[in-house]
Length: 228
Image 1: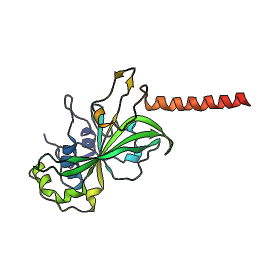
Image 2 (image 1 turned 90 degrees about the horizontal axis):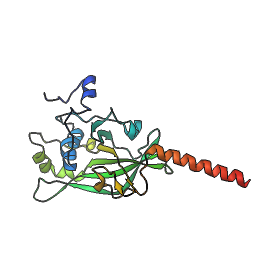
Image 3 (image 1 turned 45 degrees about the vertical axis):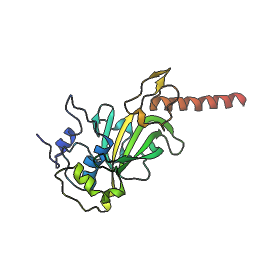
Image 4 (image 1 turned 60 degrees about the horizontal axis):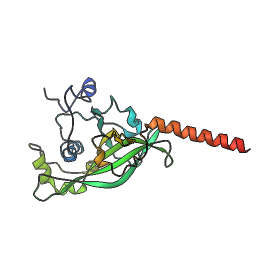
């Protein structure tokens, strides 16, 4: 049975998780044209499975049960914010933004932008880098001039007059990247998109890195005591 755009509280909990055997694996173009475009344009989206979350209220390791989960990836909509800070850390942008091009046109046109970020534990700008990454999808401002591309990609949907709400929403895709240990690659399926991420050294979780930082501080205090 097809899920309706309007759901109850119980439905909200149900749509966050896929049935056994199902995998949510859309392309960048599909995330922008099918899901994010519908959200920003106030159009119904079927199936309505990606929830809204306040990025400031959840650390990436707290997304299980809150965001749509598929494999090791979490998907959710969020409002655009200049500073992305949580209770325990913050997101820092890395690398350059990547253009998302339409494949349904003879001449490729930009329909969206993907920004890449890494989560840090602690206060900016001196936090500890973790293995949690986020890809943040934005609708391209030029999409308002490419309505024919969107109309072709999303059949049966009426044209929508774009207003300021067009740029208020982003779609976030969060996952934890595995690092290389002694030449063995434990990386995720998305590592080809993370060339700007510094993954040198031994595999460490965010908690391991916090403990190591505390150990460094303790060793420094011991050295100062000995010198005194």
